[in-house]
Image (cartoon, rainbow, N blue to C red; front, side, top):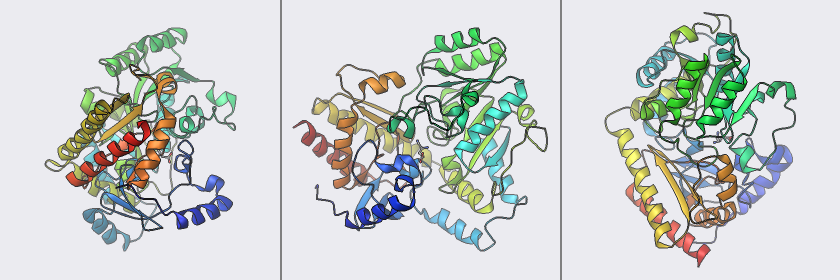
Length: 437
Ligand code: HOZ
């Protein structure tokens, strides 16, 4: 049952944070910019739950924005990390565990034959693009509006995630020259990409896409769209780059490329690959990866890349996820949740678009009953962010932590149980009833 939330400590800590860090946060999407109010300051994560500094407990569907597919402080992960940490946190030298994680990734992600570890999804995407440019000897890239590939200069053009959440223009500080080679197309529109290729003959190094757009809400690709992009890249000598930072190990163990049977040239990974520690990676065909230094001449490096703690977090997490029945059971719970939300929307006659695939989901409150969101323009036109803001705060008071933005996806974990999902759906029904009642 809904209770008034005591957030005294959260407010005090966040007030001080604002004097110390820009906006009081280490990353903008945490700042409750589009839902209003003061961010909740967290003290502990355990299983499917987070507890804040005032002692309020929440069922967590943000899961650190995706990485915690096994939930918070999963015992096997904690145990492995405890064993690893006593041997030191980083050597700046090769380790055997890098081989283990690399081998596992190559085994489960269909297109990857060789991989380079970095420290974040941002690094993975910017390195993948440098590689595509080095490999093809071309400068231009095609991205999609509302897709977010981290905060590298050339990719902060019509970006999703915090840029969309906060309604920011393309970021100041990004020189025009840096984005001069970035071409932008609407998501789910193959003809627009055909046109860009036609207008820029033999100039496009690569097309980078979030195979499911999960930084403008949750928008799935239309039938044949990803394969169509892949084929256009082949036809024009460009590389097809799938940014699977969010979808990797999430929409199938082998990511969206497994789910849709599409074969990218380069894949970007992050989030789950570190099991909650900072890791990213990019990988692909051997022939392409052979261009990365020191095997080749495309330079990219990192002091903490491949450190044993991060490798341990990722290896233990993916091994568990890939073990018998684990992924399927998480996906089943995500489906149950999504179906439950659809049923509530129908029952209360509230226009809503609910999406789910594998262990990810997302829902939009719609401004118009028959609206369908299939790209970023649709999301901006039809997503009722005001209604979402009200819903978000009512759910917080109910003890459910959702993304503080309608332009972000939701995540299920291995440790969410039937009762958690049932309680969440009951809370959602009460909250929506209050909004429309
Ligand atoms: N990459 C995530 C957005 N979907 C959130 C991470 C962040 O920006 O803090």
